[in-house]
Image (cartoon, rainbow, N blue to C red):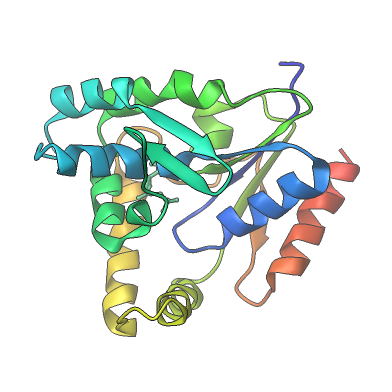
Length: 218
Ligand code: DC
């Protein structure tokens, strides 16, 4: 087992795992890896170069060469802050397409491993506990019903002053979940050694408390 303590939080889109993971990391003084951001950055970089998201060879090469710097809340791609641009819905769809390409996943592996540093790391994604950090000391599978997740995403978009349509968001989440679950490499699923945290009827504070409690009792 690696000497760096790692907590993995995997789960579907809009389950709140990013917020929970960041809060847990802050509480413990650990680093934080948002692995979804790497797939989103790959999709955005491909789009900006007018590359086809399904062209595995070309997109994998791009993923391996990404010029990315995470600096607090800023995410620099080729020197430009794209923290907001990578949160767009179209980039999210592109991310789930490029994430299904095995060579893209391989190309991003070393970059993810590099985040593991003392005093520890909280990593969120889909395959953190299964593929990227299989030796993690605590693995959580954080989920919520599709309806609850769609409503959270809806409120988030409205809160940002963006247009939002609950039915369209629900349909989009369901198709993205299906793509993440059904792909051949590193599919989204709860692994036997991950603890289930269903946040359908739970606030963020409670979810954070639960993860910290599990961590203390490890
Ligand atoms: O968590 P997110 O919505 O930012 O992730 C964007 C996409 O990237 C999502 O469709 C699934 C994919 N992804 C993945 O395949 N593996 C990860 N570890 C993280 C994200």
